[in-house]
Length: 183
Image (cartoon, rainbow, N blue to C red):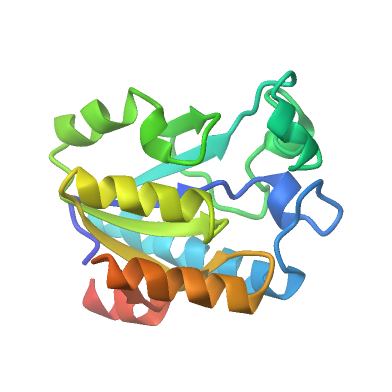
């Protein structure tokens, strides 16, 4: 599954979301499994020629929605940095200030340039950025897989409901073990 036409897309694995002291953390018990699975997938992608792309929120400090996000992931802040526990192997980073990674106008042409057909998603939040990115990717015609043990949200219930909803829209929901066995 991880090959040269596949991109592992690591969504919003930033300090403010993964650190227990972050401004808008996911459920703390979901963080370690997410990091372990994502780092294993990054290593497998690297050894199999699959592209790893990092996506990060960089919100404008003047955005009123920051009040609902507890001012998390403000552009230039330490909380907007990729979590240091995550393997960071290249410079393929796309920032965004809205929920879908496809709101960055450089992402779609980049994927097209490298003939990417399949996106494998990990990251946060299952009910927000992961969900919107998956929906947009499906609209763009990509095959989409979501790694269930490498996705987090505020609770297991929210994460699981989001995964079920995305599966009903056409995304494949797999565990990291299933993805790793297929490569």
